[in-house]
Amino acid sequence: MANLHAYWIHHARKTESTVTGYIFLPKCDCSNCGYTSTMEKSVCPSCGAAMDRTAPKDAMVVEDDDKKEEKKEEEKK
View 1 (cartoon, rainbow, N blue to C red):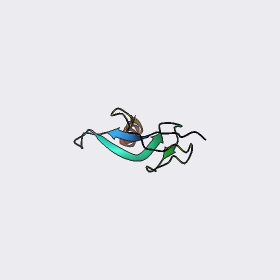
View 2: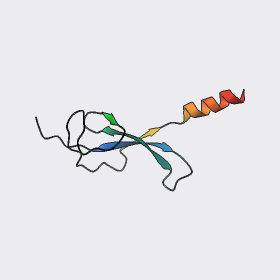
View 3: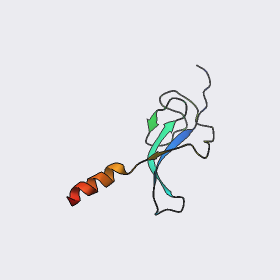
View 4: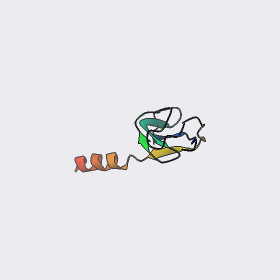
């Protein structure tokens, strides 16, 4: 097996209640295989890549709040 090196890509949601403008969620993806984990690990459980690389600043998955807003609108009706 080849020595694989990768980094975790974190999931976040936009918010106005934090300094950075994002709230980070308990999910991250392997940059090598795309496996989603609920916490950072030193090795990806799916592909075995060593998580020893630094992620680029823009490596983030931003999830939308559209579903929550739709539910609120339905409850108002």
